[in-house]
Length: 228
Image 1 (cartoon, rainbow, N blue to C red):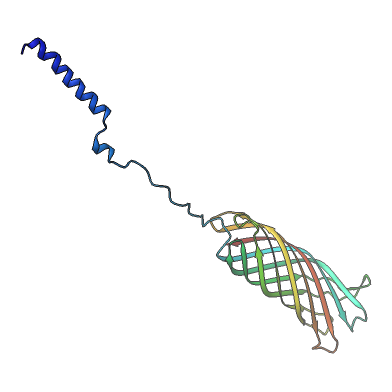
Image 2 (image 1 turned 45 degrees about the horizontal axis):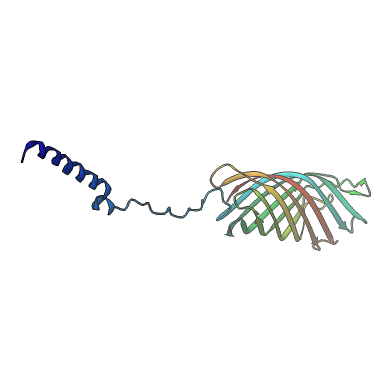
């Protein structure tokens, strides 16, 4: 065969084989799985969510009103003033955004004169009011700070003195409080914020010669710190 005929035949064979290789993908390449698996489900965040252990502590102040029914005064007596308050609540969350537990509230009303019909009596006791009981506190959105709650419990009221001979007197009974507040995140589980609380109590004492009934009401603006 002449060289002139061999060269064209070689070109035809070479380029024909290459074209066939392009048109028909390699079996090995076609067998490789290059698809990606579906992403795993999102993991819910566990921080900045109100759940688990609950601890709140705070201090505050506000107006406090007392009414007393005592035979020694001969009429209903009253006193009022600004108090100092403390609170501590400890509990847990059975579900996100809802906490239950035990609450301790304390109000101290400094020396303020008891009055009858607007007239002073010369009696100016220091007064302490303490409430202990179960509480509930709810966050409509577990990831935000707005919350509402309340408590009912047993109450003790103590007077430093009610006259020159009565150095201390106590009355016991029941009371409750409701509050609304808003907390702001300052850490993964910590938040701080203000709350407005209203508390009312009714207590009695018959240990002395006269029966004593004490009604208290307090409106308190508090600053609290919360771990929840």
